[in-house]
Amino acid sequence: MTTQTESTPKATPVSPLKRFLPPIIAAALVAALGVGLLRGNGGQVGGPLVGKAAPAFALQTLDGGTISLASLKGRPVVLNFWASWCLPCRDEAPILRDLSEKQTATGLAVVGVVFSDKNLKAVRAFTQEYALAYPSLLDPNLNTSIAYGVSGVPETFFIDKEGMVRGYDQGGLTPERLQAGLGKIGVVN
Image 1 (spheres, rainbow, N blue to C red):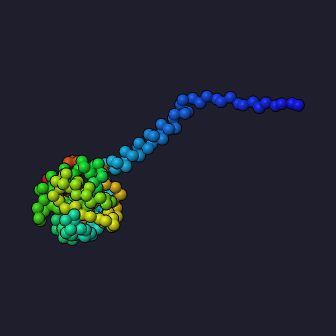
Image 2 (tube, rainbow, N blue to C red; image 1 turned 60 degrees about the vertical axis):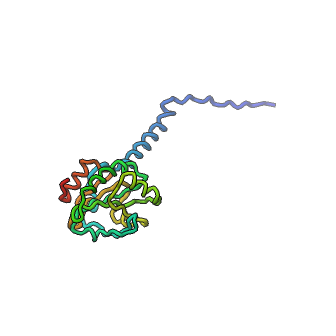
Image 3 (cartoon, rainbow, N blue to C red; image 1 turned 180 degrees about the vertical axis):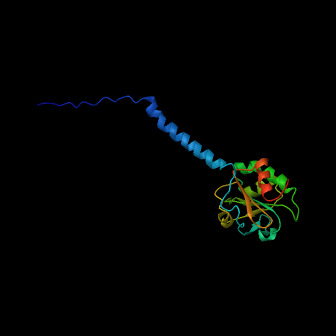
């Protein structure tokens, strides 16, 4: 009777570089993607609506009233899409609040549109925390957001007195970027 013993091959040690490099690369790619999604493109870009008529809307305010783009005809409009869970929205809220304090009944109109935020308690808390006096409109079916091509927040559209989109900003306004957008609709701040 012969017994045969199986020889087990010895494990070749894997270098630390080969072991840790793939997870490090994957983590770096995920981090870069996350930063890109959170920051947006970080500025003014053309956007598909620039130079075209702003899509019409009629949306309910947090107070139960209705505001339409048609009701703002003849006034330059800063239309900002935001959400209570959006961190860059928190950074730009004071800038928009300060701008809205300078609006008049026949001049500049600042209007917010709540994007994909079902928590009305959080929306109201956000407007109170930042003392937002300009109207925030509810877009429950996202029809207006879709019409404007909003893919994330914050996104801001600068609409001139004739109802044409003249500027677009994504990723959170700074005072400089706000001034650039206002300039495109003939508003000197």
